[in-house]
Amino acid sequence: MGNATGTTKTPPFCQSKLLCLSLLYLFTTLFLAFYNNVSPNNCLFRSSPFDPIQSPLFRYPPSYGEHKYAITTHRNSCSSPVSFSGTGKRDTFGGNFSFKERISYFNDTDNDINVPCGFLKEFPVGDSDRIAMESCSGVVVASAIFNDHDKIRQPIGLGTKTLEITCFFMFIDDITLQGLYYHKLIPQNSPDYKVGVWRIVKVFSEKLYENPAMNGVIPKYLVHRLFPNSKFSIWIDAKLQLTADPLLLIHSLVVSKEADMAISKHPYYVHTMEEAMTTARWRKWSDIDGLTRQMETYCQNGLQPWTPHKHPYTTDVPDSALILRKHGVTSNLFSCLLFNELEAFNPRDQLGFAFVRDKMNPKLKLNMFEVEVFEKIVVEYRHNLKKIGGIIAGSGGVGQKRTKRASHGHFSFNESRCQNYLLTMWGESHS
Image 1 (cartoon, rainbow, N blue to C red):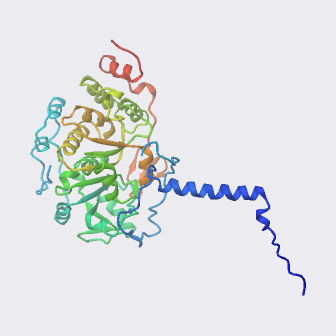
Image 2 (image 1 turned 45 degrees about the horizontal axis):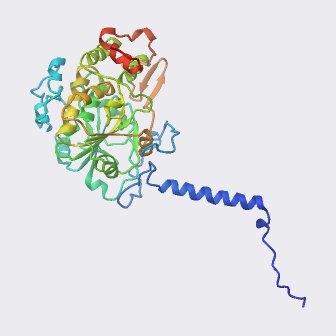
Image 3 (image 1 turned 180 degrees about the vertical axis):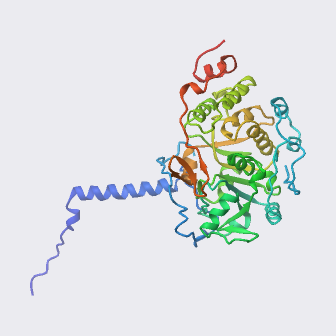
């Protein structure tokens, strides 16, 4: 037998200083990444306050393509973390208020029931849907697809008990319904439709506005009327997929902030006029003369650009694709007043937002959260559009004119009406 030695050799990987430094860097990076994910200053939300639902909420046929055309984001950190008409008939309020009539309600401090707001058109739904809507007494998550413009996408991150407290309602029209039939997502001739968590409510939109976008703002801003017994609501545009539990979002963004409403800041704009100019330039609303009249009317009646004097409001332009609300006098009043502006001018709700917010009394307690938070709690998709020749059409086959960029000279103001606004926005003094 050979002589046993008591010496041991150093493992080869420890003999290389470069390798050791690389391993140290790797483990440090992994630790910092883990810490960043669990840090309370990060935008990330827990998926659910309850045990998460593991099984898929709904299995779509491959032809439907519910996860096509997601829009990527590049922000990885945070800079800062009225009752429903049971008859289905036209309200006695009527419509087409003059501006003087509309603005007279901005100082109404008694109760929002005194404010005439929708339905300025009939909003007919089936009896079983109406009963279900009135039975929703907790949190309602509402969305809408008109003209087959988007896909129905299932939320993720829900807890096992969330569906006991939360109702999900998707409002659609006949064109969208035909698309769901085509993809066999729902059976034909059924009185009740459901796709995953979403209860599908068919609205007879031929009795509503000609513009599908205007029909969509009825459940968006009059959700407290459609769901008179709900305590909180989340409006989510159908182009978005919710990725955090709605109960957590209501608690984090509304309740804990003691807010009436929570809404994301716009990623680019601070002043209403910036949004108006973009709306005109990119033809997001084709009536440029109407946009001009709207902004001149607001300028004449006291609209000011955003300045630090407007604190605690940190911007005049929201991204209104996601709105969280506590149903109460103040938030209902704001929603009614803003809906009146949309009915009077156009469905571009970002244009009337600051005017109503600044004018109304009592003041709205508003949590305008950072864009980074928005991007952590939703996934955004492009609209359900495809090009056919020179026409952009939804899969339902109804064409819309291609969006065109307006020339610079198409959007100009009477200087006597908006001069003060523009000079303040541009940072110039004016006596």
